[in-house]
Image (cartoon, rainbow, N blue to C red):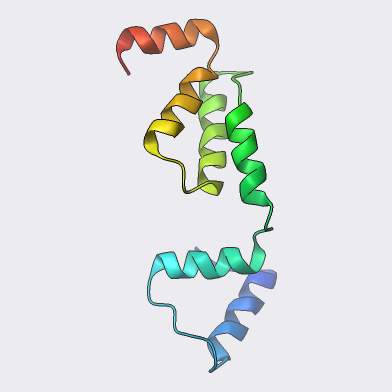
Length: 102
């Protein structure tokens, strides 16, 4: 991953500021980056979209949209995520998934 533009400027400033704590893990870096650039309301907005997501196109498109939202809402349990995904599939796709026992 490469930072560019404003992200690179932020990182350079962050690494040269002696008052800043050192980042030791990938998770710490993600928290710092999100704290700097991620809008406060974005997580709640993504959660609302996740709860209302419905399959409009192909299964692949639904999966892609679902994954994008899941990246923004990190505190969803696996069970909640599975239910949100399955409950919003087109009815015939949902039946197929249930028959397969997935």
